[in-house]
Image 1 (spheres, rainbow, N blue to C red):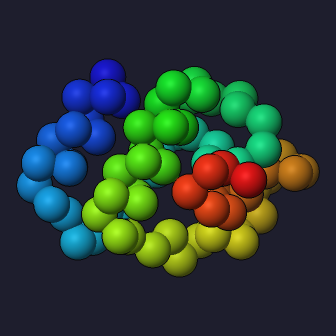
Image 2: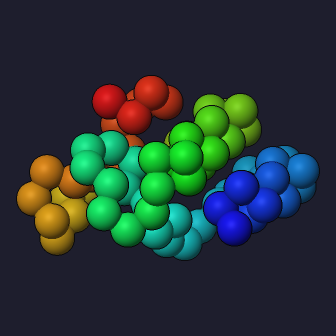
Image 3: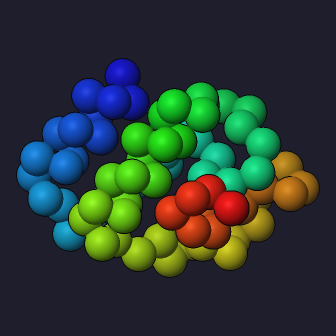
Length: 72
């Protein structure tokens, strides 16, 4: 599911991508998968997108939306 959704966004060459990915983009992964995280992060990098919530805290301590393209 994540791969096909991200592929559609890649194909559309989105300049704005909003919503909830249901993946932690850094730290532990509780809701999605590591593979899904990689699809999302790779697409963000390919499309040169910015993640404005990069340092926003999650309700689970230690999770953030995004730190860098390597998920670190």
